[in-house]
Image 1 (cartoon, rainbow, N blue to C red):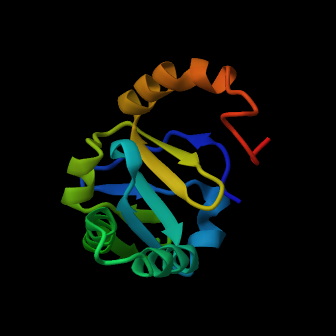
Image 2 (image 1 turned 90 degrees about the horizontal axis):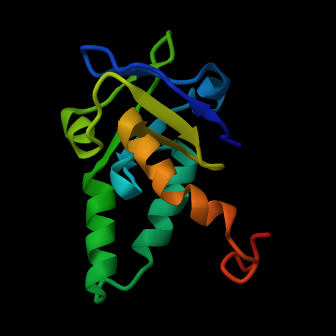
Image 3 (image 1 turned 180 degrees about the vertical axis):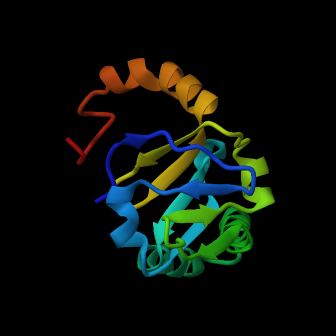
Length: 143
């Protein structure tokens, strides 16, 4: 399970050091793709394959499903962390997530998200109150 918040730096070559506690789970390969809210999603290869297969089962007659599948497949890059636990984020991924030097890596249970530090701070400020006030009705089946 991927949990917690970490603040690695992006180096001049576009490399990001993954949190040490997640390296074993990602050592067999990982997939970096565009995530929601202009973040990046990092999946263990096996988890990504499950997601991609579910997405591929959607009706291609549905324009939203087609667009999602196209963007998912076209926006994904397979990586293997180097011996220091670093991955190289493509220029397109860095642009999409507006990544500069200061990044935040958060656990999202079955995958990681990579955020620009300022964007993550703004997201948290905008959504903290709704998290605190969430009701059972809004979170049916979760809590």
